[in-house]
Amino acid sequence: MLMSPTEPIEETVSEVVEASNFLPESLRFWAVVAVGLLLVAVLTFVLSFVFSRVFRHSQSMQQDIASTRLPFFGALASVVVKSTLLALHREQAGYEIWQFIWLVLLVMFVTWFLIRLAKAVENFMLERLEKKFGNGRKLAKVQTQMGLLRRVIAAILIVIAIAAILLTIEQVRALGAGILASAGLLSVVVGLAIQTPLANVFAGMQVAFTDAIRVGDIIVVEDERGTVEEITLSYVVVLLLNGRRMILPSTYFTTTPFENWSRRTTEISGTVVLELKWNAPVDYLRRRTGELLESSDLWDGRSNSLVVTDAVGGLQTVTIFLSARNPGDLWDLSNMVRERLLQELLEDYPESLPDPRIRPEVR
Image (tube, rainbow, N blue to C red):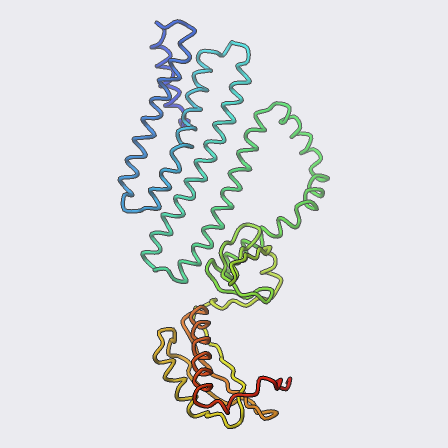
């Protein structure tokens, strides 16, 4: 026969109750509760100290251990009070109400503790994987999937907790039987009511576990470029370049095309386009572009070329192809090359720049 997880605490409370027979009846309850809470506090402190020593080299685990102290203490304290009520006030008026109140608190604290424990396990595993893989693409993939899985577990725990509390109420149990008897109608109503939320939940799981996007990916959505900041059960948060956050439903990423600039790698190529007169020194620009790229830490060494891609209406289009390790470096590198070349043309070859009063021909 399996032993209940709270049985040792209940036995300890019973022993304390027997040992408190010499006290007046009006003080026995408070004395037993005080002793029980003291023992629970000592147990919480000891376990917290032991685990803090075990994970003393991990700052994140230290914080996670600290965050579980209160729910752990609250859960055990609820068991102590419930057991004391059962032993000393079972026959008194209001016993059922107080037992229900402490049962609700017990379920809440246990659920809170399990959610915090899931977060601690997630952080511990991510910390181990970061040491193994480094802060790269594999870690981002696992981080996205584990974060979503933790949220699913938290949602399931909350639903189970609410169900456990409601099923202790006799009237609710009777209502449940009636609901089950009309399950056909209920399923239709609920299906229509939660169709969209559930679609977002399943889309969120699909996005995370099919590796379409990950936390930290650079994407283009709705003509805006940004970084995936958070993936939840029902929506994705994208941090845009200007600091704004675009919140999109998960179904967006399963039904709408979007650009992922770091799907397999963060390396990216781009172009710098200059509109110049036909007498522009193309050879000079080609040589200077190479010198600028080779002197910059932003360039990754993959792409470096300058070609004339068009010549219409007295102007030629000079296109520079370059590359960088990530979109941020590419942005800075492109701006640097453009600024330096235009500045040098303005100083040494001003006759090659188009007249700003003449609008280029639209092609």
